[in-house]
Amino acid sequence: NTAAGATYLIRVGGFNGSTGTGTIIVSESQDLCAAGLDDMFEDNDTCQTAAAITPGTYVDLVATLTDPDHYTVTLAASEQLNVAVVDTATEDLDLNQFDAGCNLVTFFNTDGFSYTNTTGAPEVVNFEVFLDPGFSGSGCVQYTMTVDVSTVPDCVVPDMFEPNIDCASAVPVGDGIYPGLNVQDGDNDYYEVVVDDGATIVADIFFIDAFADTDLYLWDPLVSCDTNVAGPGTGTGALSVGFSVSDDEQVTYTNTTGAAQVLIIEVDMFTGGGCNDYDLQVAGTSGGGGGIGSNYCTANNNSTGVPAAIGAAGSRLVSSNDVTLTATDMPQMSFAFFLASTTQGFVPNPGGSDGNLCLGGAIGRYVGPGQIQNSGTVGEVSLILDLTMVPQPMGFVSVMPGETWNFTCWFRDANPGPTSNFTDGLTIVFI
Image (tube, rainbow, N blue to C red):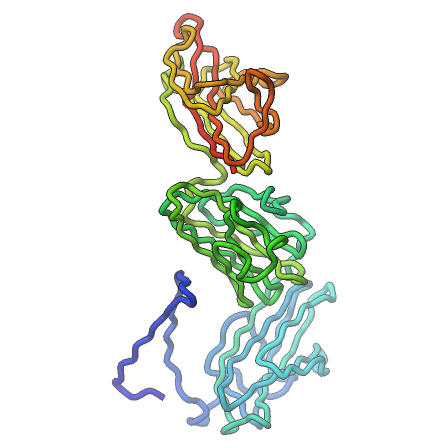
């Protein structure tokens, strides 16, 4: 009970240094038990007079030793009902579940229950909330009840990112919300992010824990990666862990290494957990949706009036072998090919070209079958690299973790007579 005119302070803190946003809901209620009043659903004293309810949170409900409460919910096929009640320290609420004919199905000596409709058709579920005679206190309890109805997760159909089944096959993502994903026991999900020095990454997954216990990990793959190797829990070597038995998880980490980091987000199905749906939200990355590498050097304008540019998508993890180069803003119908070197450079107008060569040292050319391409009507070419066969003057070499490789694209041009040009340079530090 509160005193009239009294001022109260509410403090909200993050457990173990955790941070995030939330909502404080303040409501005013009357002590219905002391006033001898009923709640809004009376008279729902029997299964036959059960009150029909929908998902939501209901406050200021009242049950007594002689006045239990009955409710009814209709579930569609494959829907799950989750009911939770909040009682007091001196009064204990229990629950009974009944079928559509008001026959007792299950007694729950707990503050809630879950039930899944597996009949393949709509099903009526009735349940009773009653005061335990052995722990009845004053014989009346004012309680809050939460009712949730959700579709049971189905992992038969893979989500759009599969098969991102380990650290090596992690899918690059940037800032944003990725809805409608699923994870199952034996098939965890992995995402690659790039975090600049000094930046803070925050990753959240939103899910219903009652379906299956789902956890969240953030790894530095140069140190350790993957709960399939490290094991579950907080002592795994992960940078941050969301490891609870409640809805939703969050990991957060600030990069203080002095350089950009490639990190792995793992969505982990706790052992024996089955399947769960979730939404992923990421904030604080340095790229959006998989762009990798950094541009350097300066490209000259070509006959289109603008300089051509090079970019890359995929993963910096060598084991993923997932890099695609793209050159854009080139003249239409021009032949082009990519070049690679471990050395950056700047050579103006090499061989009479109108462009600048942004490579030095040993330079390899992607001129094998299918690698010399035409820019077509869009003025663009792309090439999927094989990191085990990078061309060099003395033959093919493999990219190794820790190596830095630089790329550019040469293309024919007319400005106004026959000539050539280059894109700017792109450097990728592989891990």
